[in-house]
Image (cartoon, rainbow, N blue to C red; front, side):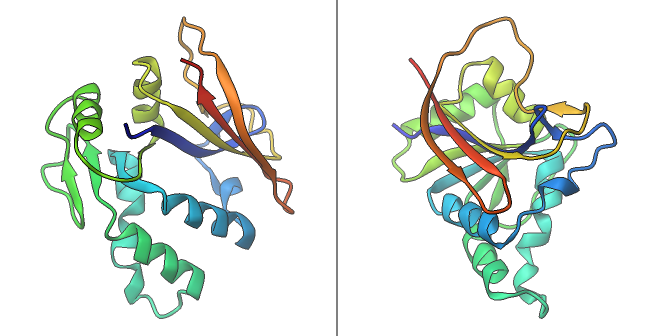
Length: 187
């Protein structure tokens, strides 16, 4: 069965977006960018909330940007054909290899897990990831912890009233002092 993963950059104090809505502190250096590119190779479908989908639209045509370097072109070549499911109540159409979700999050994940296919089911976007966590749908949390305290904003882990035990699967410290932590939900 395909795993559902949540992979994001997070501040040391636990936020993916600061109180001002900014996340410029998550801009990856070359080493972290290579790591994230390698990580996307293991994704079979990406679930996105509307805001993340709109942010990532750039990559649908980025290969036409003559200023892109080889690593960014490689990312584009991986991202563009990747199937995407967008959860939105305001969009009526999406672009690229994306479709609007036809059901709720739990129903979409159940359907995707039942379909034949390779690669993880990745979840992106704070609201969508929080909903998946609340429903107990996430199998792995993959946090790239940045050495910064932002003091508030959107938390990586939603506040809910249940305990979730995790097993450490992998760690890596980058030369930029970013620390990667990969945890599997203990079931």
